[in-house]
Length: 401
Image (cartoon, rainbow, N blue to C red):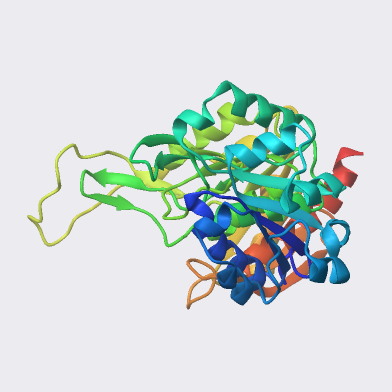
């Protein structure tokens, strides 16, 4: 179930070319089981027809300040009382200026004025307009009120120019909205997550690695951020998009991951080692591609740095969560790793045969320092990440006290 399930969203659409993206945003809200009411400005209707939004939302589109039928059924005050959140996407310079200066001369600005909850606006305008002193002053004012301002993005614009001012993609807006509704149980905490595989180079054309996709670690980092943590993600090579709001440090080898972790570990409160780090690397790196000249090729391997053990050995280590990917004797092997590494808890899972690596789903057995364990049943890795973080939160409270 999505964290947005059952939420009531008022989506304000103002007059910019990015208004077409609001259609996809409605689809994503509905997919997350939200109820959506759309308010369009007059300018927005120059870019897209209300019927589009009515069909997607399943509700009447509101566009008039004074409408007898509307006033009989919902009214601008009732709309403000109905909503859990107002999202304006796209938010033009005009609507931003109205809202920042208390002007309520249309339905959208009036509903915002009467609303007592959170408001998120996704700016969309030409680069020159975005950089203008007036817009920046208005944005600063809205931020000072606690409004959420996701974006804008940098890129090609409808006017033919390139720069800051593009509305961020609907999927990114959804991610920001999820953060608004997420319980901020990690507020004030600094969390570091490692994710993905590492690559140990043999020659310019070959390396040793594993099948880790990084999906579990990325899901944990994104969930931790949404739950209020200042989050660092140290990631090996993956094909995954960077989680919004997370400080991502990209590395390739186990040695690079070790250095990145140790460089940034000082103020970390919780360290979650979800990466599938190579245990060994080639002793020597061949500058040239190794040719196929013999029937047998011997490759001497040496140990890579022990990242988990090094963090645990710190004078004042953070709360440490390890991962244990096993093919057999899950509880026995994971428990031994927990004890040997002297860490606080470990999440163990079976890999191979379609399980674990690369899969959209996973299941975990969480083992605690006192020997107790808890099974987290098979589910989507995003949902599993939240369940794991709930376990971590409970244990971290005891650790901190």
